[in-house]
Length: 392
Image 1 (cartoon, rainbow, N blue to C red):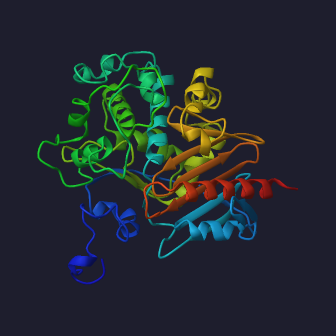
Image 2: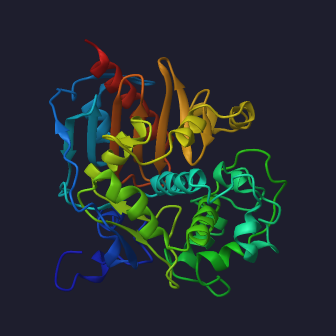
């Protein structure tokens, strides 16, 4: 996007923004490509305590040999990374023009943010996870969501027809993106996210296996907005971002009719993303203030056995051993206990290790939406880093 105006081959547009080499610029300038809604920060930002640790040379054992944390971060297209240990920032790094005030798209980390909003509504008595989805959004009574419960949506165990296949242009995830305005609409595409959801099909029974479906988070966002009578940007601001003590305004992309892209549209700064991660580490607390109900996070960390059982039957278990998906969070079992993950395509991650009191927030611009080699290396680097910081 250099030049006034940029030459056509250099222009980042709604047609190419998710493709290399355009995506790194796009992830930092979403409001210039797609409409966004403001998520307001706190009037008085909460300071982050600073410490120091030499983490770059921490050894990382990869499947193809030894590496270091610095090399792994460099090789996985890191745009920015921040590490908190025992409440203090011990490492903060920005790459290729990123700064502490730059907002960056966090993709499906947005799901965990929306999940926390929903958790607040659950424990405020406004939302019943066992209730049918249609109790809150009757508009989906004639589509694949008929018969699904809110709990099915929380844990991505609905039976709706939805393929999260980023490499296939005819997949449901790409069709939904076109309806949301993340790509040019084609003839026959619904206008807006909610219009897309009302026409979604069925692939099996609700409450069965775990299948990662972004549409379930958009359904959850619609439920939250209907329950609260407010749009998601304002709910995130009032229930999470301002109470967290966020330093900068965040934003969320919206479709042509003003609906937030709940499943992946949030952009925020690295430090505020790390504040969110630290709140999760502290069991929903910020200082002496309760932000997210402790019971909501406790349920995520210790789900019913069937949640783990259905996860074990998926390919996800190869990357996240003894893992599970609950309340819009990923988990895997480390040697020291469960690790919570918030994950987004193209390498967005929050890594929360309660046993070592470590949070890693990483923003990236992988050329591919999904890259198992990069993900595995990043997880190993975070694990090695947490173990090194925990040593006396």
